[in-house]
Image 1 (cartoon, rainbow, N blue to C red):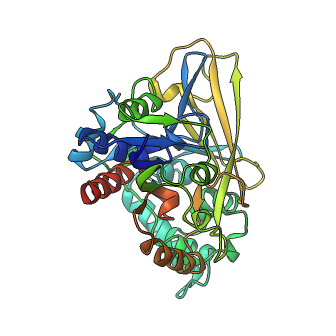
Image 2 (cartoon, rainbow, N blue to C red; image 1 turned 135 degrees about the vertical axis):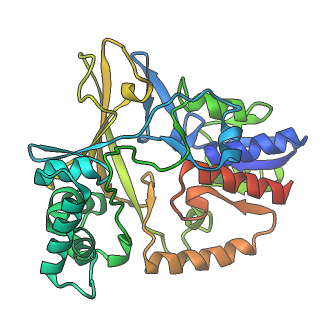
Length: 365
C-alpha cells in the first residue's frame, strides 16, 4: 500500500502529527524500532502501577490550547510535582524555597534567607565566572551549591563542575515562599492510566509497525510513502557523515519492593556525589496509588555512544554548530520533515513537543 506519510517514531511528536494527518484524510504508516508505541513517555503496568519506563514524565503547561488538546485523549489527575533532595543524612525541598532555606539555616523569613545568600556570594568575589562551579557559586552561594547542585550536576554530566561551561546554569529558581510546587505552569498532572494509552488513541486510523528499523525498512520499501516525518537522530539519518552529535544517556534500575510505600514521594534526588544514582522514582505516587507493593527506579546518568539510547542533547557551542550543519543538509531533503527531541537536537518539555508537532502538521497538511 502506498502511504501519504511514513512517520518514523511513535513517540509524542510522531503520534500528534499522525493524529492530525489522519483527521484530514491522509494515509499514514507509523514505524518504531522499539517494541512499543509512545516513545520515551511509554508507561507499562507492573503490580497495578503505571511505571514510567524511560524516566518520570509530568505533564505541565501554561498553554490552554495544548492542555485542551491533550485532554481529548486522557483524564488527568491533580498530581503536583514536589521533589525532595537528599544530601548525606539531610533532606531538602525542591525547588529552592523557604522550606529549603529554613531546613538549611534554621531561619524563618525571606529577609534572613536573602541576607545569607547575598553574604555568601559577596565573600566569593566572583565577577567573571569561568565555569559552571563559579557560575553556580555566584548565583547561589556556597551552602546551596555544595549540598544541592555540585554532586547532582557532576553525576548528570559525568565530569567535574569546574570542567563544565558556565552557560549551562544561566539562572537558578530561588523562591522566597513556602511553596514546593516545582512548576509554575497553570495546568499540571499525570494521565490516569498512564501515557501509553494517549499515544495509542492518537495513532488510531494509522498502520503501526513496532520492532521496525527505519533504515532497513526504507531500503526494502523505498517508495512506501510520498513524504516522511523523521523523529529519530538527525545525524543518524545522514549516516553520521559530519560526525556524531553528543548526548547523555540514562540507565534505569527498576525493581518491585514488598512494601506499600518506599520513600513517601514520587521523586527523590540524591545530590551527594558518593551516591551513584541521580534520583529514585517511586511510580505509584504519581497516581496516589494504594497498591500493597511498590515499584522504584534508580536513574544512573552515563556517557552516550553510538548504539546507545540517547536522552539529553549536549547543547554546547560545539554540538550546536554541528547540528546547524546537519540542519542545512536537512533543509535540502525533499519531502522529509525532521521533528522532535532527536530530529531537532533540543530538549523539549511535552507541551512544547505537542505544539511543535501541531505547527509542523499545520504547515504540511
